[in-house]
Length: 410
Image 1 (cartoon, rainbow, N blue to C red):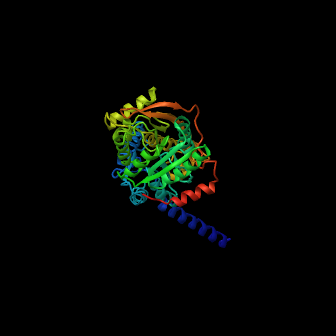
Image 2 (cartoon, rainbow, N blue to C red; image 1 turned 90 degrees about the vertical axis):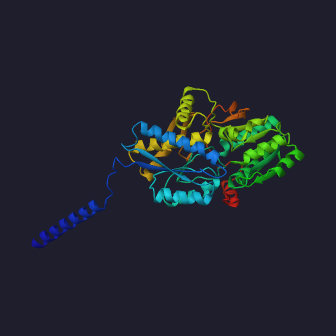
Image 3 (tube, rainbow, N blue to C red; image 1 turned 135 degrees about the vertical axis):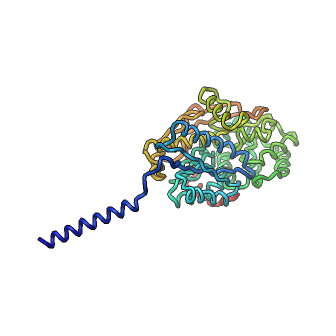
């Protein structure tokens, strides 16, 4: 009996000590005075600065709206911003800093594919969460990324098909030298051939370069029916200038990495037949878009220009916030699981996450660039398009090999 009592007493003591140790080690409940920190990775300097600035403004607006409505879980949301300087190396350093030093519970951003390529293994290693806002080349699906931009079947492929039907099937490709353009062009070469077309030429310009003389000479010589551009950042300005100087303003141009801010900054409206394709246009009618633009310009200035990627950045913050509210926690892994069930209303309509692919359903609008740099819709696809990251006319293994071969150039 005494042995049993001694054993029982020892067990009680061990449990008491274990409980005390747990209480001393367990994380304290979040202090309501401490903000929930999220991080944004975006180019505040370098050749894509003009493109990145609207995304920063849109994400800040979303955070301001959340805080004005009382914050999340009784706490204010704080947006920490890190400059990627338009380079992959700086982007990787910034992502590590936001996760390990600032303890951001979610990351938002990256412009270029090269930025996403280096940030992806970082968020995967930390079991973290990145919201990527850009329309891109697809060929990817990470368990730690929500892709709020368009996949190829939601933008590049249907818009190219529309342009070939309208202008002709002799196509010239130009892009910024890097993984986005090289992967997209590999896809487009196949797609154009399958559509009965021909790629007359292909040219890559270093990021930020104004050296477009060679491609302008090519265009003068070959006279393609259609030019498809995946140029990013400042090189758009040099290309538009070159087309004007060479009297090629009537040559049909379809730009995939330039929206209102780029058209406004670089004079894209000087070209007579200049088109682009997005889900969101500043000119969209309706109270939701008018109210969004009014709020953003009240916060960022009356001349602020908004792009489709900026709206994708804005709705991404609200998707994250919706998941936090629903699960009652900002813990990254819990939110990552729940955000797959979320949808929110934005200035362009509904944004809903496709749980199978971690991308969002999107509409497609094709627009012509007006002389003032604004976009006028010429076609709207009637239905939302389900995201398909890997185009079906080749195997997933083929596209994975294409992505691997392209590397991660600047």
